[in-house]
Length: 374
Ligand code: ADP
Ligand code: MG
Image 1 (cartoon, rainbow, N blue to C red):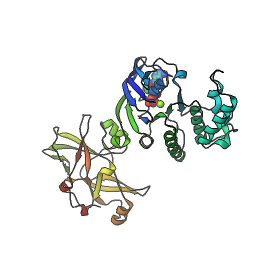
Image 2 (cartoon, protein in one colour):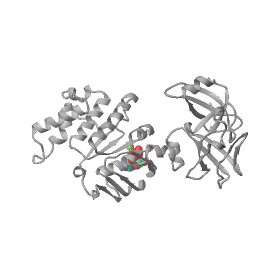
Image 3 (cartoon, rainbow, N blue to C red):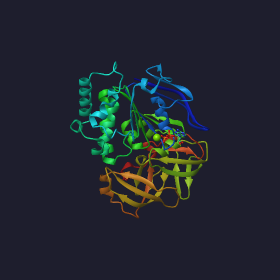
Image 4 (cartoon, rainbow, N blue to C red):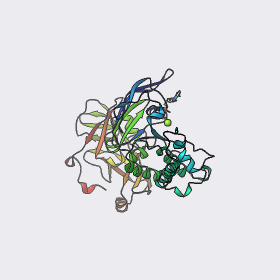
């Protein structure tokens, strides 16, 4: 079931929590709402659910206006971070709750409810815990029960508000994978709120990045990461290396450092933003860039080796970070204190005080002999 959000505005007293939000969520998609605390994610989710009313705008499910429909009639499933289970009820009774309280003409027969609860518990792989009480479950198990309970009414729309926020990293990762599988199997449309960019990028078909009651950008995770449309999105999606300089002709300079830009830009005060994977390192300067760096630390965690670097003869507010492969690490053997040079492959040019980045790519011919690269 598709969800259309059309021009939603929400005020709390004189404070505007949502500013004319529009978003199309196609049937069967999992959309992540990503943004810092206070950006309006929960408020938007509650308005979709019908738990909160908007001051302006409309919500449509599958083309039908549900703006005035009561939460019960919208038939959506929810999972919240602290959507407490009923402590005095067993796991099975918790999952059955929504069905048990239906008016008798809508309520399935007891045997049918029992069967559906068993099926849902199997689905979340907790069938063996049906007779336990919530206090006897781990955090991850409780959230799986909360999800089974949300699915008991066979919703076509599932809304999740930081559902894994209170769990530890390993359990979060397992539950993410498992939510994705479930989503694909049951084809509901899901809206998933998180402030964790990794979670949003891993799970979502599309991510809507929110800031101060507005949507900054909606795109696939790949597009969002490769082509952020604003500085806010850039900064929010992870570590970024910045070279700030003054342009004269096609060269951007600061101190001893400079970068030759592949296309001339209008302004003179400019910043180049580069993600860790958009920069390579060399032991000699490149033809199109002179960005000397000193290695401050080498960390061998995970799939790549992460180097923290500080500028030499120029300045940067934050240290730079570049990842190299373990194979490159073994050949080069970089040490703390060694000097090297950053070679931008792709960079995003942002005028100081401007909003929208302009992506630059250097052609292979404009760069050095690839053999010199580490
Ligand atoms: P998020 O989920 O992104 O952290 P929220 O949607 O919870 O953000 O809140 C957005 C803004 O609206 C915050 O500044 C919050 O303080 C405010 N807000 C949310 N709910 C209420 C409320 N019931 N009354 C007053 N202000 C609220
Ligand atoms: Mg919230």
